[in-house]
Amino acid sequence: MTGRRRTRTTSPLSPRPRKAKLLYASALIACASVAVGCGVIPGATGGSGDGPVKVMTWAPEETNATNKPGMPALAKAYARWVNAHGGINGRQLEVLTCNDQNDSVAAAHCAERAADEKVVAVVGSYSQHSRSFLAPLESAGIPYIGGFGVTDDEFTSPISYPVNGGQPALLAGLGEQLGKNCGPVSLIRPDTIAGDELPVLLDAGLKALGHSEAADQRAAEDATEYSQPTRQALQHASSDSTERGCVVPALGDHTDTFMDSFRRDSTAYPKVRTGTVIGNIDQSQIDATGGKSGPYEGSYVTGWYPTADDARWNPMRSVIKEQAFGDNRIDPADAGVQTTWIAYTVLKKVLEALGAGEISSLTIRRELDNGLKVNTGGLTPTLRWRFADLIGAGDFPRLVNANVTFQVIHDGQLTSQRQGFINMAKTLANAL
Image 1 (cartoon, rainbow, N blue to C red):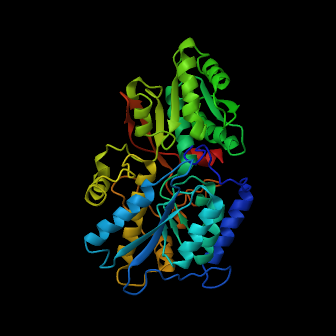
Image 2 (image 1 turned 60 degrees about the vertical axis):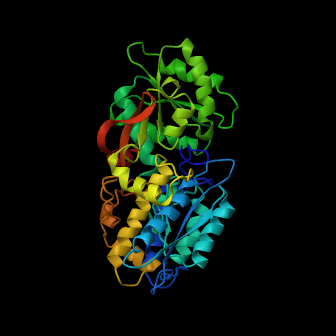
Image 3 (image 1 turned 180 degrees about the horizontal axis):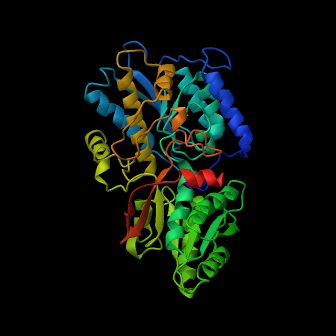
């Protein structure tokens, strides 16, 4: 629900079977643990010596699909801020950026360039083409810190260090949020292989609250109007006169198209609410569709982080104000910008821990694998990537943070519905 077709939790190819994924991850872990073999070059040295520490951030820009220009823009601003304040342990930070163009070939080229440039890490990036970019990174031993979490492979590769729970945590969390607040639930999702995963995760959250499964309604993801699916969803969601039902549109870029039909057709049915996940909706989208008078008013929204107006984001806002004032690409409320901030917080902590020692892709991975704790100022729980910290959720062996936040759109604004984080680890383990 946050990629080009934002419902996707996988890369464009069909997903690996669970057993194959786990074997694949185990083999790569074994490869990464030795100095030679398996094609791994464990000591890329883009930051060794006294030169700048070189990293890369990539995201799609200027495409006809999902664009995340704020992520590389924030990365550049972060580097300017670090360097203006003396660097990290006196070392300057150099950020290279790359446009993945929402294209598998371009994504592979970004990863190949990262290897050629000998960057020590790829940080705070977005791409749904994980099959294309992870292989070059794995071959070069370059860690992937804080990817957006839009693909399953980000939670299986041993060189990936995710900072959130990706789509699995969001959808399971949405299920729990709706399970407590809704009567009958209708899920409208693409009639695709990727779409087939959505009801499993949503239903896991619903069932955790003793709620019945959602009505799984398939629809063409590229339709120009959704009158029939809208009426079907409304009919099911309003079928219980004692409880107000909820409709979950999960049609990626066509969610807004669905909501146009929903606004028009809902007048003929009892009132129902909608539910979605952050990334599929943001404050700018709410504003553009009418704010408190728009179709999203009253919607339940599951996110990874505190709401954008939370004081815990003030350090990020200060950096943006100091180094990127007037840069309209950087929206502090965008989940991609927020993820990039957290990813660079992780990188800074790693570099500080390495001190005057060698800074390379290998030493960064070792520091993370050996149990470095990263405090993100309350934006996430304390992050750590030891084997003992992996939550063991079936298809997602690299997942360490399964926490989500529950929000609601009130008076046209995303606000916290429930304080604190809700841990989805147990729900995910039961679902997968």
